[in-house]
Amino acid sequence: MSLKIYNTVTRTKEEFVPLEPGKVKMYVCGPTVYDYIHIGNARPVIFFDVVRRYLQAIGYDVTYVSNFTDVDDKLIRKAEQTGSTVPEVADKFIAAFYEDVEALGVRRADLNPRVTDNIEEIIAFIQDLVDKGYAYAKEGDVFFRTLKFAEYGKLSHQNLEELQFGVRIEVDERKENPEDFVLWKAAKPGEIYWPSPWGNGRPGWHIECSAMARKYLGDTLDIHGGGQDLQFPHHECEVAQSEALTGKTFANYWMHNGYININNEKMSKSLGNGVIVHDMRERIKPEVLRYFMLSTHYRNPLNYSDETIGQARNSLERIENCIANVRHRLKAAVELPAGDESEALGAKLESIRREFHAKMQDDFNTADAITAWFDLVSEANVYMQHPAVRLSDLEAILALFAEMNDVLGLVKEEEPELLDEQIERLIAERAEARKAKNWARADEIRDLLAAEGIALEDTPQGMRWRRK
Image (cartoon, rainbow, N blue to C red):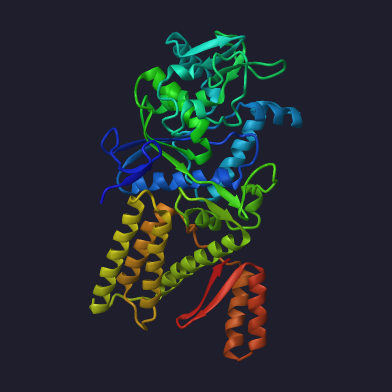
């Protein structure tokens, strides 16, 4: 098998060949930290976490960089509204970001550089573009000459004359051409600023990622990722300014995840239908949202609704219950002689493992990889119907579960929690009530335990419990 990635530039799946054997340099655009993240922000964070996990699982040494935009019009407005400073706003929501994404099972990037820590490199980058004739200053602002970069539009596959500009590109009569975009913005009275050769100001949006990607990963990246909404203008402008400066390909593979709709409508501020992860975590187990995100191919749109989240919850519980059942049977399992059943199980596990990796190597198809996981659930459930199970067979099932989970991160691995004395007494009392056929008291205790978040399950091998 060989890993294939759908490249936005070529609109085809291409075999992945890294710049350096065994190593991957990956950059993913991070959030503008002026508020809590919504589920649209969470989708690329979760998906590219899986990309990094899978690349590591198949042996690559991955350097993963994802930035924070910590100075921007939105942060300035938030600081004014809250009577705080831009750095205070950024610090608050960076901390909230980490809290949210770690709850979603996301492992931190190797580096999360902040714009404000890289102003020197950004200014130097802009100055080099000015010196090369790709940028020009007007009244304290600096603009990029898009017409000078002949390949402008190659990422989004748009003709320069037909381009529809994104919300962050403003019409400005000082521009030589309407398509030119800002690299440096002159500070308005009272705004945060840094000194530069063009006067006090701050970076434009697009230049940040080009400068930080180059600083931390070099002139050419293996993979650059982000949401589909960033294709144009943000990533298109990144390509232009980076390749104009270095004369080299900025990224060999561009990956973009699809949009999220809310109840079949586009998620937007005007509709007021955004779902904030910070709030959602109080209603939905974070692992359910992660499952929901990965249950559809990353390039396809997702529809968030009570129904789709309910389906995700039920599916994830099926996986979790199967793993819990296998672990429960493992406690009483013994090492029996290998027989035909064990040999057949081993062959099925290997077939499922190959299928899982085949789907992940086909442009990180997490949806079909999850289907392979359910094949494992089915096989495990069938095997556990036998009155006697073999220790090494159960261990093999759990090992494959763990291999898949290390990539998808759907089942949270936690240290077993000790029951407090009160709950232990209740469980023991319930067992005695059942022996005495006092079903009313047994049911009452079950309800009391449920109120404490303890679910009891009576199995042929005895009672087991789990925390909800």
